[in-house]
Image (cartoon, rainbow, N blue to C red):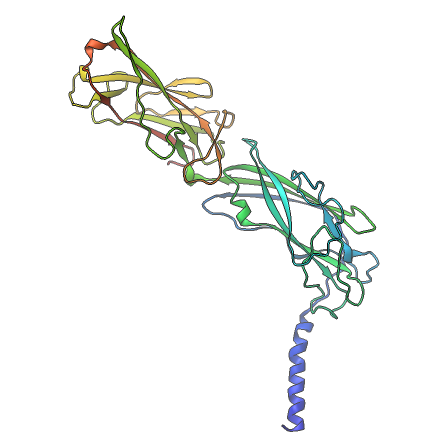
Length: 376
């Protein structure tokens, strides 16, 4: 290889090595200042939003080239190390020297309507900023550090800045069922010599719906179609039969039980038309006269009020946002939800036993639910 060719190759190699350094820019001088942010979002569980970024990658909390303000040792703390109400993490400098470990902060979210709580993990990273590129090509130490530690790795002196990133990951958000969820994360910024030089608060207001999960739930018949007896009793003295039975039912609107109303329709769906009460069961051996038919009524209990249900006529239930709730685990769901209890009472008025044919009777009853924005 000629000497001239050797020099050309050396210059080219040198240019390749210098390109990354030319792109690097020193972070701007930044002094810590308190910040408040509102995170207001809404989504349906059928279309999750993904990660919520609270601090973008390498958000600079402090950077001062001379290093006299000790910004290279900034660290963050929570208000409590045992209570997740505003974020749970160390309240003092831990001096931990662990690297490449993300900081996890459990934060309590509360559903406004039901009072249900759920702890979600906020994940954060911290990096130290250098005064030169002697140890890193972009002025930032490549090591991830715990946000509650002032530790650092010396490199021709102390670091002169600190940057963070923080997010609430989408997998955590999947744990929130339908409802209005609120939370507040509060973090304090310190140097080893000056405490609480800035405060950062994040207020969350997350409205979650689950429109695909709107359902009528029968707790005693978790995975099967309800099969209910009329509980007929024979009175040997009066020689009459009659009875009363209750069917446990709960309505889930997919909106955190905050619908303006719910529409419930009870329908006799038997093969033969019902009697004058609106609902009937018929003798299993057939027949169309009154002796082959037993009539009954249906009443719905909503928030302490008994509502007679007419066959095929929708009954609007108001006050859903203040009605008592019941915690249930619906079929196909992994998290419990709150539904509105609305038990049905099936009552058979007493009739002379001599007017009815002995044997077994059966019929079909259909219950339909309508909510303002969803028709299941």
